[in-house]
Image 1 (cartoon, one colour):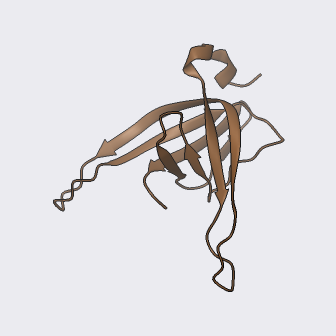
Image 2: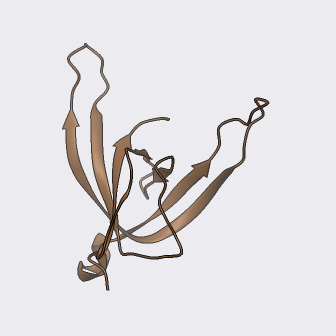
Length: 109
């Protein structure tokens, strides 16, 4: 049993992990794979407004999930939440005995 399963079910969300894309050595587009991942818990980390007069807000969050050997988050993944917001994995996902911690940053890749 992991840490996320200890929280109420209505706190958990299903996300879509977007993997792949980009270009190969010849410049041809690579296929994108969308993988549904159930039972995640997402919480905010921080927001900050830049001082360079841009109207963009920098937001970060963290995704937690119970350990599951059949799926591993990668540092190159993107995550789409149920509200349609796309997040980039921001660094290496951390694997703990009670679950996985995935740092996220909102924005386009």
